[in-house]
Length: 378
Image 1: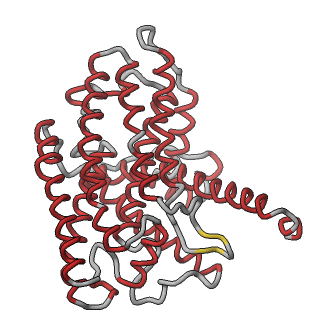
Image 2 (image 1 turned 135 degrees about the horizontal axis):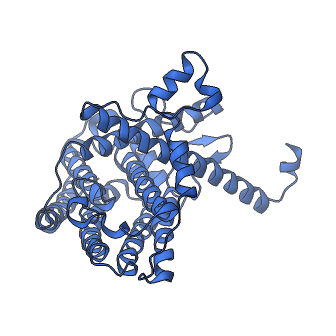
Image 3 (image 1 turned 45 degrees about the vertical axis):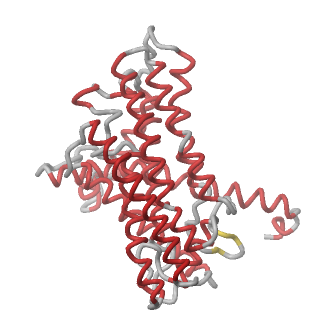
């Protein structure tokens, strides 16, 4: 492409950045839509139901074998649900605080997309790194942005001017503050081991030394790696539990809690405003799954298969992206499965777990990891 070579380096950087944003945002929104379909199908399987199987497009539905198969699979339901969200009446109750009421869904949605910007979803394609913004302090940026999401939920509860949304917003603020502490402390051992805050460097370290969740897996055997195994597994467990609380998923969905608070902070919302909360929740799930993949499971690398280096061809670069997405989908499957298998915690149990269990464990894990690194003369 001669026209691309004629551009200045700054213009090329802007072009490729916009291209990567489009290539990430488009598939992410599609994955969010089909994650909803997957959740409905998994819940139907667990509850011995059929699940979505009615929507059929006139032209494609008539194709033999393929049409009925896609219809039975519920393949077109996300498309219809998306259209429905736009054409339903966008009703704003008279008693709400209107400016905050309109602003809250956007504040809840945007942080999830901003987190995706710093996650390396592959190695390289050509000369381009498969990350939108390769920040040297990527993880600090991530936690800073994630903490903004609670403002949208709290604002929604306040703006509704109703008791159930208000209680949901208050619950959410206390829950997210509690579990953000545990989540942030759980990744400190990772930084002690890797010695860098750049997410790409964390993946590179795991490519040569084994995954952080289990350093012996592909990293070689030594006294230090053996002693770091329980530290890595404990870090991942704390982060994993905190991710459920941060995304308001069962068994930690106290801010919504349909049996107690009707729908919690989004009770008064309809149409696309409710859809933005819905998209934000699933986008946060993908962001959490991507973070766990990056921090603890080697990102786009696989041990023992020669895939731990930068891509030297387009096909290898695409394979790296596929590996990353496969790991991320596995975590999404766990998110979905847990929702339909575990009961909701009581609120006092939720807070007790966060403050009296996870935070002390995370602090002890930091001290243990630092002691292992100091005693083994890393």
